[in-house]
Length: 119
Image (tube, rainbow, N blue to C red; front, side):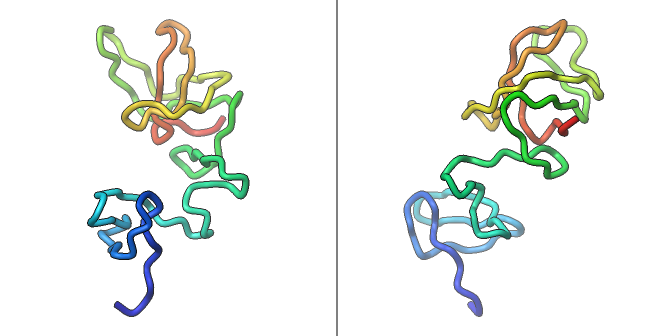
């Protein structure tokens, strides 16, 4: 190895390695994207930074637009691309869903930040 790699943020293991664009810890199997600004996905105050599909930082109360059509279980039609979602809340959701919101015609649901962009 020519450059020293950062330790694992979960278990502090020094045996991390690169796999494509990810960093991987062989001891706890944690995978993460290394931050280019040295913050590793956290702000200076220790809060998580959630970014949308194009890299804009999201915050509570923002309005976002869905960038691709989404299937909704139990609904004959899904959420169309271009649907505006107002007043989002950022949460630590299940399975990568980090936005809690209410969509007109569908009700309360959680979205992934990778399928929305800041309006």
